[in-house]
Image 1 (tube, one colour):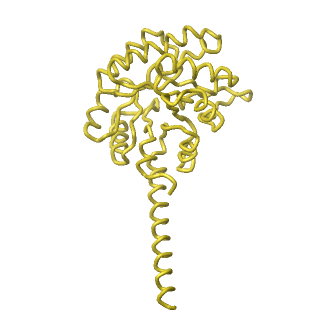
Image 2: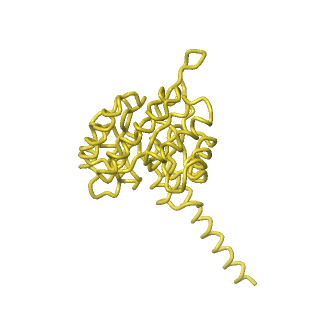
Image 3: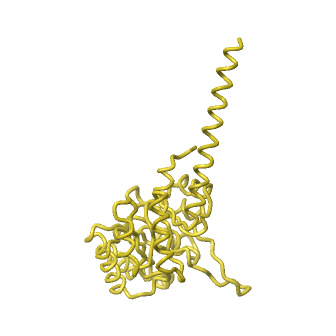
Length: 257
């Protein structure tokens, strides 16, 4: 296999963000995250304390969304939401920018908004991933500008999407692309090595996860965690079995001669 199990598992932020998620589903999701040894769970603010209790001692971090999913809360609300999440045990914060302000070119506002969350999180020893929601952004210039200002503001990651950025289409339906190869490569190229990149939305299988890593992203939001990592174990076992067969064949051939 190209990467180890641990290298891929520790890329995954197991997403527990569906609007209908119950407390039982939260607990099951945390147990699954611990079983597979992922990087973190990504949860809603009210659940941070319970997730921290469930995951204590497992090596799985608690990540919490802020201003989710549309980024429309005022800056002070985002800052205070971050403070509460960190007090409750979150050590990673996934915040959404104010998308309308970015589209309107109010870059000072966007940077202050991001900085407020980063400063608060860092004060508690937590790290911040900043969600752009690229499906809403019309061109690369805006994405590049966001990469630059997020780095200045102290972001630890820049992130493609929330996973919930459904955009109304001309036919009246809703869909989204989420993380694209183009955007991942663009974002990686427009932040320094000290800022990481996270993919979110649309990565549903092992090959997709591997491609995300190939493009330079270090984290990936996922709900298909079990399917991806079970697939890894199947491929790993098949590869080892193939190597054993090849080795036995070589020995038999040598003996025959």
